[in-house]
Image 1 (cartoon, rainbow, N blue to C red):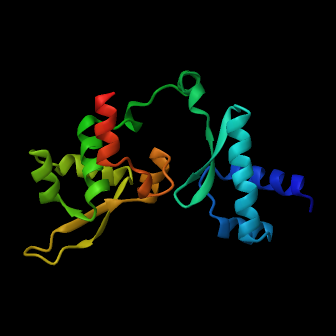
Image 2: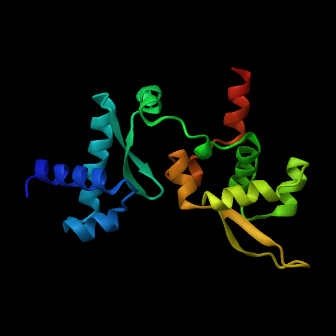
Length: 176
């Protein structure tokens, strides 16, 4: 198979999937080796970005996914119509940020940081599969430990948690 055909095959798989595909999944489907897949995907990522296409190929949640170009978000919203149920409240975003940065974390620790109860917000985040129960803490009452999910990475377009902004990054943003 020629390089052009391999690239087209990977594009087709990403387009059809709608979910991140890992190099090992792509290897099993295409019989290409992982280094070759990574090389082709890096080229696709750069090509889409440089050509200002309507879609981008992004490295998300340990795999590759085709996503819409943020430049066209307002038009896409008009087509799709905004769905309030898919939006997160400020309380949910605040709770999610606490969990993302301090995971694994128990509800009492989240509430200590927020200063308010978090039962409803945690339930919403669990229902949306942005957080999960990671186990129980070895403490009196064995409280549940919460952490983020692969869906969290997908929702925010992150390759992994190391892509979260640091406190220095956030402080720098505030001074600008």
